[in-house]
Amino acid sequence: MQATTLPPRTADLFAQGLELQTGAALLRFGAARPRPADRISWSGDGAVAWLDEPRGHLWSVGEPTAAAGLTLRAAHQLPGAVREFTGPRGTDVLLGRHLAVADPVPWVFRWTLDEPPLHPAEERVTELDEAHHGELLAFLGEHSPAHSTGPGSSDVRLWAGIRDADGRLVACGAMSSLRDSGAPLMASVATDAALRGQGLGAALTSWLTRYAVRRYGCCTLWQLADNTPADRLYTRLGYRNEDPCVAARISSH
Image 1 (cartoon, rainbow, N blue to C red):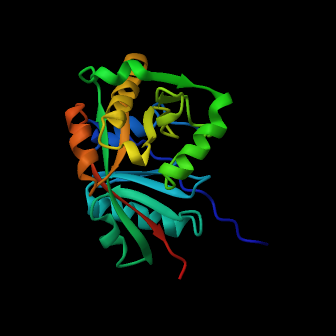
Image 2: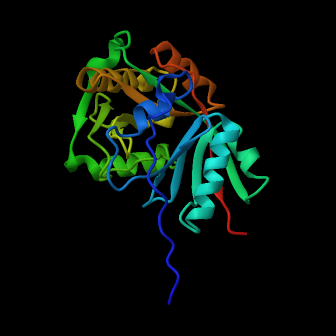
């Protein structure tokens, strides 16, 4: 008889009250409550973790040692299913004592519940639809090749942009969503490389934030930890900076 690996029992991510603590906004906004029937998750000792199965991505929140322990448990219980992870800062170092961790990138998960101050150039922002997907793809390819979300993504609710006097696209951005919870996630904000520093990105970011807060009560985003200009902008717009994270791959070698 062939052995079968059974998935672990799904844990209640909210039983410990972590979502109410500083530094656990990724749980508060990122994990659906009530839990989806097909979500595989772990909980215990001051941390929780849940798996995005299609991506093979494990999310964890809480105390770094406990989060690393849950990530290790998940990798052992579901061999090959956990290919990458995001956890509290330091998780990568702790997990690296037991698994081959590659390409760690420090991030900050940022969020706000409030509309930002009005930017004067917000009046230039317009919504873009499917007819503009080709234009968006070309613009992102030229000015933001490493963009996280592209036109046609099923997670995106809205694309918005700014045009110059000739009608040429000079800035764009998306209102996407966190996969498990559906909470609004700003993504792929990009500005024409020749026009940076003129406030176009700030206007678009402010407009998208206002859009999300008015419709959903919050807005979230990911910021690279060493991106100082973005840090200043998001702080000015009212985004909280309390959730330092790290993302990395689990290498098979």
